[in-house]
Image (cartoon, rainbow, N blue to C red; front, side, top):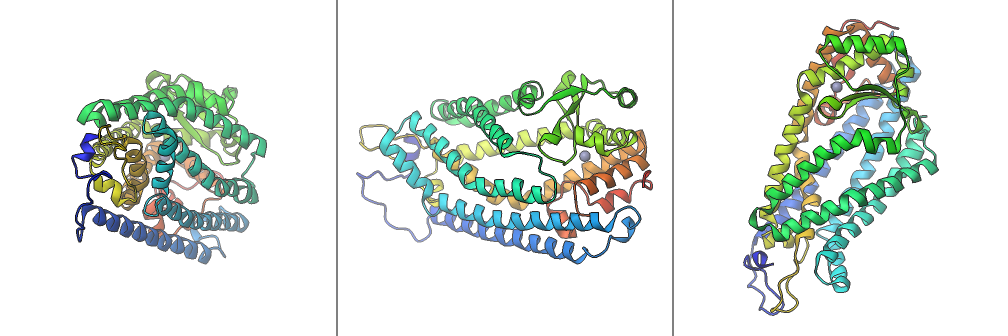
Length: 450
Ligand SMILES: [Zn+2]
């Protein structure tokens, strides 16, 4: 690949460049390692705060909720939160070790060299590199993911999956990834090699197109592979929900109930689809846990997200950020120090008469590995915006439906999902996409149901 060679890459036939004290590659290594260590320290500090705060408030239900929540439920929420945060800490350690292993310790480099030795340097090798990377990563993640579902979720009574269902899900997921992911990966690799300097603009367009296509495909073709959807049959609830939607000026293609209880006791409701194809999906668990007025209030909250254009604004932000990401990748992929600084020796021609083997798959993987290390530090900005949106959606629901019903629905969902009522304030500011329960309830009327 000429653009990399022009940038100062040495092939085995050239003498090595004179050593520099502080090359761009060394600088990248240092910055990357520093961000990794700093991020890990910050994550640990936050997790420790959360553990201490939740444990300290475990003994008694906080005063504002004393009449509404039993001590046993409060303590279950505390224990569940602690178990999840502790598992998260283990996950951080494993994740950071794996990241170091892939990058600075040379794992990706070794994998790339091994595949190049057997497959040569073409598209086949690049695709094999992506697949091997995904397969190894998946296998490494497997034990913790199984532990989360079959030990943690199981212990607190949330897991409804059998090993058989888990396996079936995994196989369907793999098949979908192969059917959709492989062609898209091949297309992006081809664009990187064939579309010239502005390949990243084309690749971004392809990526956006794929996202829109999936938004359209998901409710009609993909979700039904994993769950059963039935039309809402409860006529009274349907009349109530339709009246709400009409009042709020929404038309909807259908109201559906999904058998969420097949996998988990956690409850939810969501909107999917684009434009006129919008549908509302209630988890069966939600309908079982909430009174009709509460279901209406929860739906009104979701409508609030639409009315305030949160969904569109969020998508627009993601589109813009991914454009910046692709542009950055387009630039980095032509810099030799980007590879060397992250522990990978870029491919160079084995014979000076041949073109260099492309480094595109390497660039993609290094970018996907390294970017989150830096993005982590701006995550609180996104959490903050999301919490502001939640307040707006709550306010909309209070205006359009019963605020007292919304408050009691919220409390019921907190209880049934074992979400803690006493998170550490700093932890919540950093991570929480939803404001803590006390802050949300403070802006609503008193709960309707005990
Ligand atoms: Zn919301």
